[in-house]
Image 1 (spheres, rainbow, N blue to C red):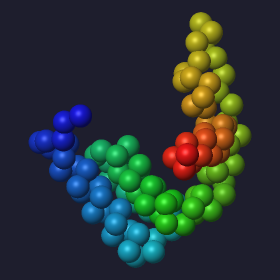
Image 2: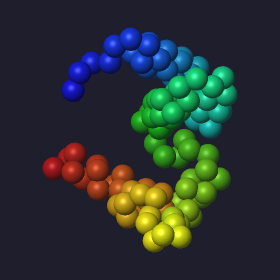
Image 3: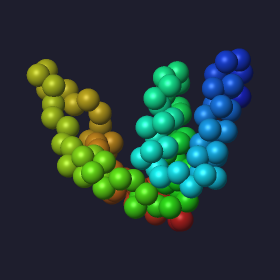
Image 4: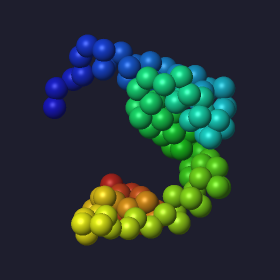
Length: 108
């Protein structure tokens, strides 16, 4: 894998700096995510990093309860042509099982 170069690298550095600032300010995870993506730009990178830092520091309890309920109750349905939008191992309602399996694999 090659290191990122050009503007992509700058976006990641900006996202990291912003996320660490929000973590240092003890900003709630929900507020941090909303504020990180509101200006636009590279929102998926900003959200991933802005959510990962407080999530790692404070656990899944840092995620607003109504967000957790929405994700964990989401059941992907097949498209009209029968295809699923993502593999059955990566569906939102199985997120906690997937996280547990990843933790177990990392500790093994």
